[in-house]
Amino acid sequence: MKKKIAFVAPVRWWWPYELYKNLVKELNDNYEDIDCNFVSWVKPWLQLHINRDKYEIIISSIPFLWKPIWSKFILNINGIFWKELSFSLWWIIALLYPYNSLFADKIIYSSDFLRKKIGYWKIKSDVIYPFVIKENHNHKKNNFLKEKKEINMLTVTSFSFLDKAKGVIDIIKKLQIIDCDKNITFTVVWGGKYLKYIKKQVSSLELDKNINILFTWMLNKSEVYNLYISSDIFIYSTFQDTFWISIIEAMSFCLPVILNNYILFNEIFPNILRVDDSEDFINVLNNLINNSDFYEHSIKQSLITCNTYSSTNIVPQWYKKVIINNF
Image (cartoon, rainbow, N blue to C red; front, side, top):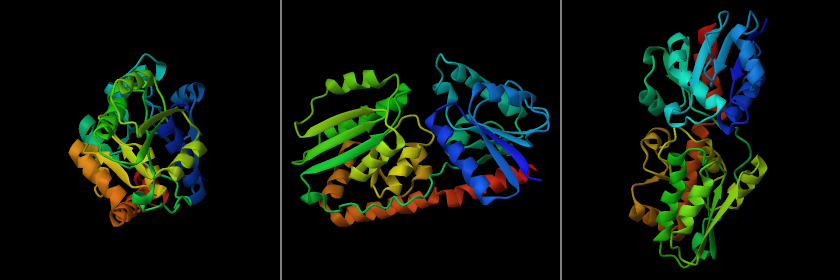
């Protein structure tokens, strides 16, 4: 008889909603001894509290009000929750993470950086990174950017939290001082409550006429994928993240990636370009534009790193570390 497992994620939240949805499919497709189910709604979440003999394991990125009596309970922490609180039901429930850590049979973190930051029950915790589904994203990029009249740069981020949203300002301030005769379009994808504030801050910056900042608001997956294809460089800056799946997605589309020198990235992206300051950023960007060998090498590093976070590597870790070890 197959072992039944429930994966519980917030409603319509890109990550871990997308992560769990893909994870359930991959586990069911690859392992015949388990039956995984994806739960992402208030009513079934409440029903799982009194789950009797239905699921052997409940794996949840949302805290529970109490430990389900008849199931193993795995708590999956994906963010620095005390920085992400707001006046909504799910963020109020996030206050229960410390309480849940006391009765969880195991805690899974999305990075070692996050495990050290939170520090709950290290003896019964583990790290499993997020993953991307490896599809045919290897679109050949034009590595002769020097010959192009326009360079397309892209970031995909969230404006739900101010510290995270400030990363866009950090990038644009670096672009502000670049000396380049090409037209540069920097496209900023996604939204959130601080988008209006960030756009107002950007409007006060003095940018050269050849630099165009484009805010797209929220797009569906295929629209974001099309932007990966049409872009030349992916840039990301953060002051809060504990992981961000769009960085890996950009790598899977053969994009060179520039990141700020944030402590998390030293752990998860050791070979990707990380810049300390504006001068460092400009040097790297000029190399990407003017040196085709450097650009090609950066793409290869992206693909190598992306493969590390492929479903082929990550899904078996969920099966062995979390599922098998808890039966």
